[in-house]
Image (cartoon, rainbow, N blue to C red; front, side, top):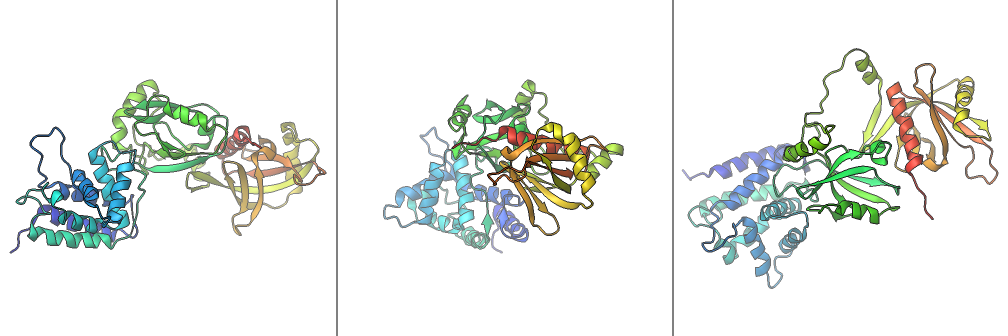
Length: 437
């Protein structure tokens, strides 16, 4: 009976689970990190350490030899993967580079080709023990290459740029990108811990607080493509100040997984930040099931999530021209004026985007109207009967050279809490949005 290696047997089971988890394989697949960890252990098995060196040798050092030995540029895709890994500024350790490279070669489905080139490069084989290593054991090498072939036949959709924690862990945080419109300030209080930029607090009424694109404890990983990994104190503020008045793209690493649990590698630094801001919560955010009034209020709330945005399901009650004045004072009679003349309502989707809002009929998906925030003159709630009705005023014919006055648009939210949230976000929208010529 041929000998069996426990690492290969475990990898075989892991690959089977990976293939059964659906296609394409994404970062959310629970078996992906285990598979990568097993591949790493196999590449480290039998790795011999140099006698007269203070540097701990890792499998990445062998992968670097592939690029140095490729004088005729025969390796092609393998060399490109090595070069991309070497140039990634988010990776600070040899371990991180090796892990990034493994993920990259899985994504490009060239890991089998990489190992074949390693086997034909004498300098690389010298790193491994002929008695312990899987790469130099013919009985183990054949099943290993067969498993790599199975891996190369799968389709992957991995977020390769989410790599800032590969130096420490195979477990990756949730990574999301937020596109911010030109504004005066985002309103984030930042702190620098272990070369990472944490969100310590959000200024009240700021764009960051209203849009909720970051939470306390999240990490700002990139700003407009500039990595903030290993950033020095104040570096993020300098980058953001240079972009004042310009569109900003933020890549954010969440301090919590999608199930609300704390991302484990961040527990220690967040405990330090919690001493400065006790509002940072280290427990799970999965709420206990509410009862009574709280339960009824949450059951009534209706909204849809599209990426980092919230689309509200509300009732369109009507609209009417209210004259030549569009200040907030007109809402107290403008809302009853619309309600008296409206005998029907429609269920609509209200999408509060960064620069404008849109209202779409839910059943037909037809857009009813769209208004940029600077076009809105006022917004407010109606106190009767239960603070769920709100309205805003816009120019009735903004494209016409002859103004015909203002139009009052009236809608009803599912709950008073949701109504307050919508009004606050619209108000913040035309407060923070800037236009430049």
